[in-house]
Amino acid sequence: MPDPPDPTSSFFSNLHWIPADTIYSVVIVLLLLLAAITTSSESAFFSLNPAEKDKLKAEDSKVSKIILDLLSNPRELIALLLISINFVNVGIVILSTMILDDVMVGKSETTKFLVEVFGITLMILITGEVIPKIYGAGNAMKVARVMALPMNYVRRMPPISWLKWLLLNGSSFIGKMGKKSIQISSDELEYAIAITKEESTSEDEHKLLEGIVKFGKTEADQIMTPRIEVAAISEDLKFNEVIRFVIDAGYSRIPVYKETSDNIVGIIYIKDLLPFLGQTEDFDWKSLLREPFFVPENKKIDDLLQEFRTIKMHMAIVVDEYGGANGIVTLEDILEEIVGDITDEYDEEDIEFKRLDDKNFLFEGRTALKDFYKVIDIDGDAFENDKGASETLGGFIVERSGRILKNKEFIVHSNVKLSVESSDKRRIKWIKVEILSSQD
Image (tube, rainbow, N blue to C red; front, side):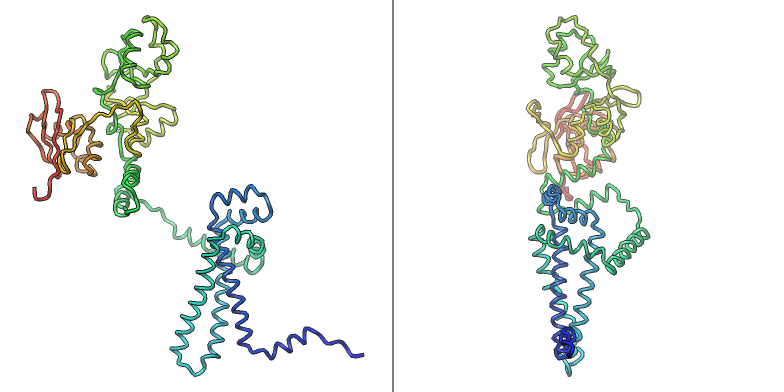
């Protein structure tokens, strides 16, 4: 009895009569489909948003665990995808070239070259890159779920797993060889922020970035409230007098001094007084004082902010080289250097300047230089270099001129004219500021 025909040999004998170009074309279509699947997977995995990742964590299924495991090592994932995509693309290019060599017999080498380069590239770009990436990004969760198991299998399958290991370790070695520390100064960072300002960035956002950059260079004496403007309590006051002072001042923390205002001995917290409001005037309120926190004038406010957080305080006494109090700086003062003025329902809207026109302003002499820069919109470097020990606009004029100028006297610094509008023997009260043009 004759043996039954072998179906395998029959299949391959029939396959022998199929043209090679037809087989290559079918394989190319399959490779393009594989390239599209791989590319859409890359786009999908890296397009998952935090909400979708949280949803996967909550599901606790096998597929969700695999997706999260793949995402937990993005370098391995991207290496796996790159190896797969490049293998597929190389196969497409080789087979497409073989087909074109048969189809374009007799054509010039230039024509064949142009068709191979532009035709094959366009085919791979559209069907294997652009369309799949758009689809993957728009259907990230769906594609990730479908491709999780296949990719988990492929990443463990030789030779992909070997190549992935070589790629990861090779890139790490090269990265270590070329790694070097990059140092950039705050001035360079300021310049970078200035030149990258876009129309889409609001003025407030830009000022916030500038405030962050300048934050580390600012010292405590530049943002402090001067001693002369600090509401402080003498330790000699009776309890009822202290209560009246607290009500009038309206602050939650008030420094307490002994004999003179530059000798701060404690801080009184208003919340500590509340339980004793019914006490007589002889009540020993000084027992409620808290230890003051002293900082030097040149203390950087970024370091001061960290110390505030560590010791859980909101106020520091700024002292000079002799230990005398120069003023106070609060947590709010520090934060305002980044986010701008912070006001609440208890803040008084004191007008410290008047805008006469685009180039003329009227400032109080006690206006802080930092606030002065913000109002007239200058970086203030020229003033900072020449200000000496002064921190106010009136103090700057005295520093530069060597005396308290009389009314109508002025100085010119950089392109700013500072004219004294009102002064007495002790201080400059009002200053007219004029922004000069290059011709002036």
